[in-house]
Amino acid sequence: MSIAVESPGLSETQRQIVELARDFARTKIAPLAAEWDRTKRFPRDVIAELGKLGFLGMCTPEEWDGMGVDGVTYLLALEEIAAADAAISVSMSIQNAIPTTMLVKHGTPVQKQRWLKPLARGELLVGFALSEPEAGSDPASMQAQAVRDGSGGGWVLNGLKAWATNGGTADLMMIMVRTDAPGSRRGAKGISTFIVPTDTPGYRAGKPEDKMGLRASNTATVALEDLHLAPEQLLGDEGMGFVYAMEGLDAGRLGIAIQAVGIARRALELSIAYCAERRQFDRPLHDFQAVQFKLADMATRIEAARALAHSAAARKDRGEYVAPYASMAKLFASETAMWVTTQAVQLFGGYGYMRDFPVEKLFRDAKVTELYEGTSEVQRLVIARGLSGR
Image (cartoon, rainbow, N blue to C red; front, top):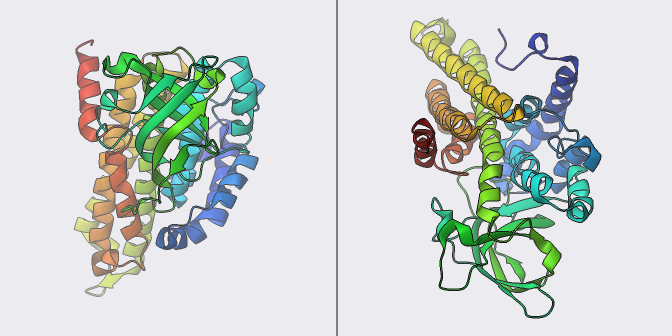
């Protein structure tokens, strides 16, 4: 029995993409993941290689130089990268999810030509900034502000964005700020999205956050200080930025769900190998029924989490309303990853608590999947509202 998704259930195209992703993950990522974690190094060169293979443009239509694959195929590839190093899968997920969704659905032809094509080819790295120090689970309460500059309809942005993925390494950021009148505070209706090259004067990224996990993924606070933008750098309609972000979050949450599956899968793979090798009381650990049952529960939860994510992705591909299903997938998969990695540490015993063994890293990486792009509590709210038809 294989833990990973194998070829018999896949189309020929899916099989080829999975094999390409798996080979890249095992040869280019896995051997260096522990070192990147220790040094907090963001391996831009490896991300660029992912781009050359097409993995940063999987969800972009072919007319804009992407692969144009379906959601399930994308998740299959992302799982392989996440199983090797969840930190690297973050950049792949961001590049394929929120910014891409927003540009594809709401970008002008000029914006797509200028930004979407190089993003799909991996020539540019993108990030996303929604949250603020006082606006996390309630992003509609953000304070960062854009006002007209009075000279041709341009904008001036000021404010502070927090926990911005790729905030210090991206070439381009999608940034949410208020465009309603200062002091009016119309909630979500006063938020707009701007396309911001990170070399724009007034864009300043802080030092990388010293995180528990995903340490090779850059996360930073971003200060916007009298940052001037041209009118054409507004994405879509003024005041619709929060709506666009929520559309993109459905795709983003599916990416986090399968990232969690990849983390959990790797923890189970390592646990199975360790329990076959490690002997106690003159027997391999896997001969003990208590260990067998633990491994069985780990495998069952992983399969269920993957199935939820793939089912939600298929719904999205069919154009169905997917928000509660994406939240179900993220909720279950993230809690599965945390539970499975906890069991893996337990199975490894004292070794599982040591930095020299990989399950400790997987445990740290798993925790954030319960937090970012909506905490587990927020996911339960989204699911409950879906059940009540709100």
